[in-house]
Amino acid sequence: MSLKDVMKDFDGYEEIRDEIAVLRKYGIDHTPKRGEVEKILEVLHPKKLHVKVSEIIDETASTKTFRLVPAQGWLPPFQAGQYINLVVETGGIITSRDYSISSSPTETAFYDITVRQVEDGFVSDFLLGSTKVGDEFESSSPAGNFFHNPLFHGNDLVFLAGGSGITPFMSMIREAAFRNLDRRIHLFYGSRSDDDVIFEQEIETICSRHKNISWTKVISDPLQGYRGRTGFITADLMKSVLSDLSGRMFYLCGPEAMYTFCRNELSKAGIPSRKVRIEMYGPPKDVTKQAGWPAGIGSDSLMTVRIKGGGSIRVRATEPLMNSLERSGITIPALCRSGECSLCRTKLISGKVFQPEGARIRKSDRMFGYIHPCLAYPLSDLEILVP
Ligand SMILES: Cc1cc2nc3c(=O)[nH]c(=O)nc-3n(C[C@H](O)[C@H](O)[C@H](O)COP(=O)(O)OP(=O)(O)OC[C@H]3O[C@@H](n4cnc5c(N)ncnc54)[C@H](O)[C@@H]3O)c2cc1C
Ligand code: FES
Image: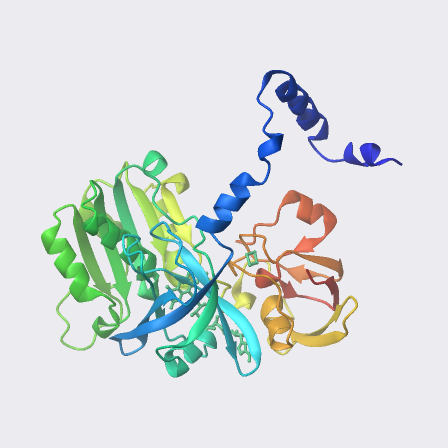
């Protein structure tokens, strides 16, 4: 079979070939300029950055902001709401985690990332416990689609933040304030206790100076004597504060439990899903609670993963495959660590994995047996080909 015959098997091959023929006849031939856009993109948006911690700011008892400046070159521009994938080496293990940039894109000399301590956390533990001013890291360029697009999202925005999920919103709020943007923003910010609220003073100051920016603080687990608003971000609360919810764009970012709760409340309030934008904060805390997880497999279930051409390892069924591989010294390319970007796509030669809702597997990947190890859990022994 010739290469041409093989190509015919690809969906859309004939249509693309016909389109190229039309362009050749009537369009402009851009072939001599091939590669020029990539060269400009590489300058504006390099794949890897080398950053240095220039300052560490205590935000709350469990949260710190790390100010990152370039260790080499400069920092590319970003859209408020985007994140970087920070590579960390600790205890001989190379791994990475995503952190939304909390500073405004108008600050071009640094990126701030604001990290909260996670119970039984690995990287958050390392960053909060061991990182010092002057430490250097590798990271991705800013990435992600959780940003405001005035063409599609309008100018009437409602932010629903929970805990450290405030960070992308802080960047958006700071930008709107610094640039005096003609944008109406209301932030609902849920925290466990009053001491946990990050950036409170700054949010207050911005709201007092910009009539188009306002906020509602909600505390779910108040200390005795707390006099502010308590509970969760409910449909009733949103309606009572904003009266009319129609025509607004809702952005949601926070811990897993909050997503489920707030998505429910938004649909109760009649908000269509096209009016809701969501930032996932990584894999689920307990995958066994996800819809479709098979009965009988738990945190003590171990599987063998054979790596084609490279030995085998024992892994926990309830840990994302990517984490288990990293634990064994095998690092694969990663960016979103939430199953969305496809960067980690890996060939599954044999075996079965669980990929929860949120893993965006392309049709072609499903057809040819590719998985996203950042959000794939082994349900049987596996053989994989690492990229
Ligand atoms: C787009 C995006 C933006 C985010 N922005 C922020 C933000 O602004 N602020 C913030 O605080 N968080 C943010 N997060 C969450 C952040 O990426 C991390 O998930 C969070 O800091 C917790 O990381 P952790 O390693 O401490 O805990 P987990 O990610 O829960 O890590 C614990 C896991 O690490 C693995 N592990 C444990 N020990 C080892 C070991 N020895 N070797 C290898 N693996 C091990 C295990 O799988 C364990 O389950 C964001 C996430 C996403 C996806
Ligand atoms: S790192 Fe993005 S899909 Fe796995």
